[in-house]
Length: 83
Picture 1 (cartoon, one colour):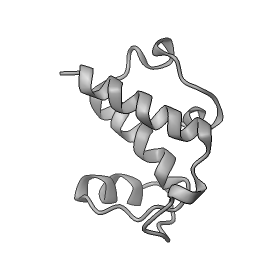
Picture 2 (picture 1 turned 45 degrees about the vertical axis):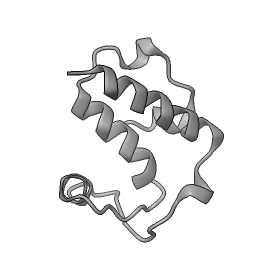
Picture 3 (picture 1 turned 90 degrees about the horizontal axis):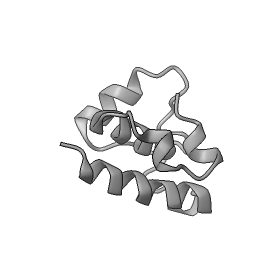
Picture 4 (picture 1 turned 135 degrees about the vertical axis):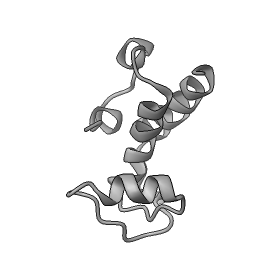
């Protein structure tokens, strides 16, 4: 759904109309695409309902690209600005 967050650096315009929840999903989808096993019920339920998701590892940090790392930080900043 939010593959863009793994392919290109996001700008404010890319996410300006997204809710705080949508941003949270976008950020966590980056981890999910690498097979991260979620610990929070909210993310377990959400990603567990996605046909493509296969949680297999507890630490995906070694597989995150520079683009993904930058976008994770950017999305976190934008999340903190939403009510």
